[in-house]
Length: 81
Image (cartoon, rainbow, N blue to C red):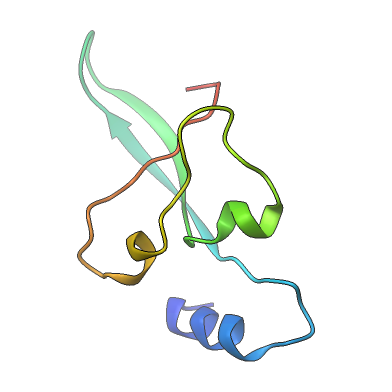
């Protein structure tokens, strides 16, 4: 499903409590001893809210971070990272 279709679905369907989109990707983290491949997901700003989870420390996404196409990227890291 495209991002535009997701936005239409999330904004028009009232039978669900919420809808969140995601897409997996492979990336590379550099620094320290060199480059390391990592798997990640690009998620909608309400992803954690829809799942009903909160971070152990720090924060998840602010509403404005999901609305601006050229906004700075924000990452939420898991324990495994």
